[in-house]
Length: 363
Ligand code: ZN
Image (cartoon, rainbow, N blue to C red):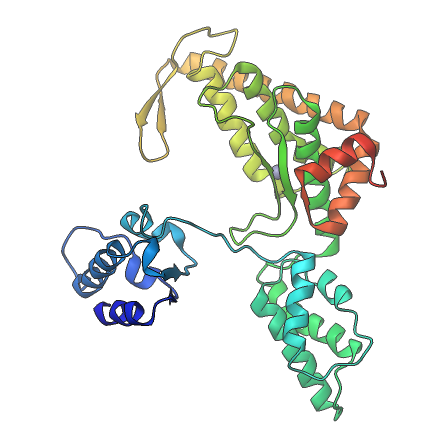
């Protein structure tokens, strides 16, 4: 480590890149047991070396990891790795560009349409796309041709993606359509409801976390308080995804599992801790037992009251859900228009969303 940074100082301006930083940067457990001593020494040395650098030394230190949550907090303090850049799976335009980069190394026909290939590979990573180009080249070689054709690419997509599909990363067109409606459902309820934070970004590119899409809302101002109206609007927005599936497909999927969990959590907090239900007024029905680890709660009421708490929580969720279904039914044209647009684009910004919501896609 000392030698690495000595070299960096000599060669400045330069970039130090540490791949898979989690192998040395894992959280120190402090137990002092096991064979971690060498790793911890390396980490300590890295921290010490990084403290010796400032912006004027001309050395930029970059690191990559697939497991940011496992990193030692000390690494992420200001002056060390203080800026995080999440690299998510590429969107349609990104996939097309990545395919073009890899195709530079192989002889391809003049009429290859990379957009078609990119469309067929929603959810594929950069490495998977490189593999598709490679596979297409192999197909051409097997066939004794010098030039890779569109048909080779189509076949390569099938061979490679069929393999990945089993792992669940790449989604079918049917699922992509359902996810589009689901996400627009969230966004439309947010966009059409007072007291709701503006939509910032909507995407149907699968996350590495396993989520098939998400709608990101960003509050206009940072706030620490949440009003009852905002809480209700938030729950309505959470039910919007499922509501859109019901309104359009007359059927529901497992895609709302996380929404259900979040909505229930918030509705329960409204009743048991925030004094936001008429029935229980300002009575605390739950106590927070663990402030740190996710804020575990424990019921602090009789079994009979617990039953009535459940009823109240259900009532809040049901009302929000019914409101979302009603709102989306009344705005079904916008739902179709926006879902179609998202399906095509895969990622849209909040501005695009508002533009179509108020003026239509062709305005
Ligand atoms: Zn959802």
